[in-house]
Image 1 (tube, chains in turn brown, yellow):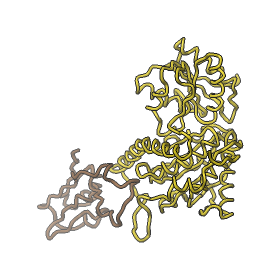
Image 2 (cartoon, rainbow over the protein chains, first blue to last red; image 1 turned 90 degrees about the horizontal axis):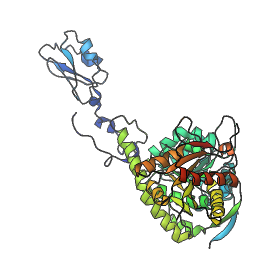
Image 3 (cartoon, rainbow over the protein chains, first blue to last red; image 1 turned 135 degrees about the vertical axis):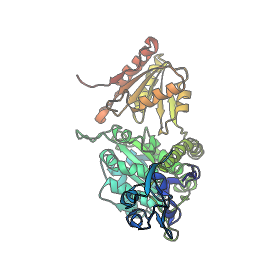
Image 4 (cartoon, chains in turn orange, purple; image 1 turned 60 degrees about the horizontal axis):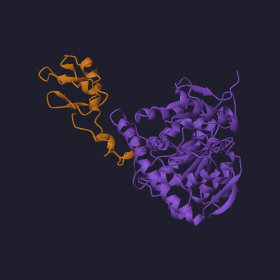
Length: 94
Length: 391
């Protein structure tokens, strides 16, 4: 999420979006104040986090889950729901 | 010399709008602007003007319709006053934020309460930070000339901002004056059809008015700040081109008898006419007084103002709208800020006048000039006077 966003000179005027479907390109991950860190050794792959995540930011893998930090807003629901407490919310540094 | 017509301020603006080949007009009638809209609707009904006239149920809707029309690439005009402008307030920011080059005629009128239909500047001054270019005309001729120039300024791709052309309610809106007009073909040549930068077009969809969060909103506002800065250049260019066409010279402000002036009045709109007449009289009696009349209030012409001041020692800044609770009223605050930024230490005092359409008479202005001359000597400054208010 550290990529630099475009400045006023290169952005279209008036906040116009000149192409459709551009919401996909808008990374909401940098709204995050706390970042979920998954201890994948402890993860039992129950997928409760995947069900509860309001941003569909949990990635399902073969044996455990991962987080799509481009879209995770850091709400912490995953950490709260995790039955084995393998998700820790760590404050983002700015 | 152009053709001469007898036109009120409202009619002068309507006539200019007709000649500017406006595509869409959406407006709601309100005193003292009503005739401006009535005349335009007549032009459209008679077939003199090939425009879409949208009848709306409020000023909020009027400007909303104008914004939509402007986004399609059309040339758009609206007009309002007072409560109507207040009701538009939300849409004023959307028009400038979406970079719609709409031109609006405003017949300035006091705001309620108490209810009053007469002229003061509280309507436009209440919206002075809305990102529009704001022009004040002294008479019907200036109103006519500025409307034609306003479209060219607004639609320039370096600007793309809405412009309001203000005339004092009743004093200008309803007084018939001699106006020199251009021929239709001359206006068409000066102001060719609008060339929009980006338009909404079903074959090439874009999104306008999307949510813009803290990570982008500031950049959008900075673009507007830059556009207003750029507009200085564009306004000058348009003024110069208009001068060659109409042989009438415009700029950011007009100066009268400022050359060796010791004291001056700064004021907007029709008050300047009376102030100039009084200054002429005082000059004939050997008193060194002058008048500065900003035509362009936003962007505020700081550089031009400082240049116009010359060696003047005292300034009376006349405001026709009250900034309740502020140290000074709006125009005076801008003047003092400018003096501070340019390191000029002048003796300035603020005169609030004409609220609710109260006349400002030659004798009122003579007293103000005399006080300014006195202040030039005594160095008294930084106070607010309330002209003609009864104890």
